[in-house]
Length: 151
Image (cartoon, rainbow, N blue to C red; front, side, top):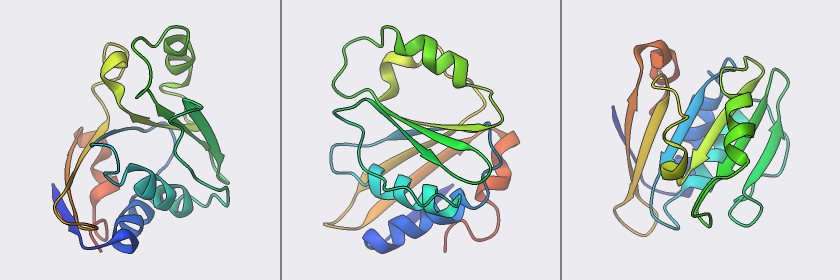
């Protein structure tokens, strides 16, 4: 599925629409260059899931947790790491937990532990604020991209 957004507000709204459909247990992999809109998307995702937490990039902290009424969103950013180390164990413990949504940026070093059942979103910057979102997903997650995902 492909979706285009024209600006930061639309990118956040796309995240919000998907976030409002999260049930817990989902894994979302974000692929993009630096400044590609990943954090903006996650800000909307968390807001759509009901989180009131401040969302910021976990580039320097590697992970952040946002609480929503039904589950926690664990947001990982492996950009600065050459290997995942003990974080692989933390990630494995979270995967499949129905009270957790896992969001991963720069996940090349943890591909071996990521489930096939996941939503992968590749974000390409087309203009200053415009983005193209290319989404691939397991049929089990088709509910995330149903009606209203591309508003």
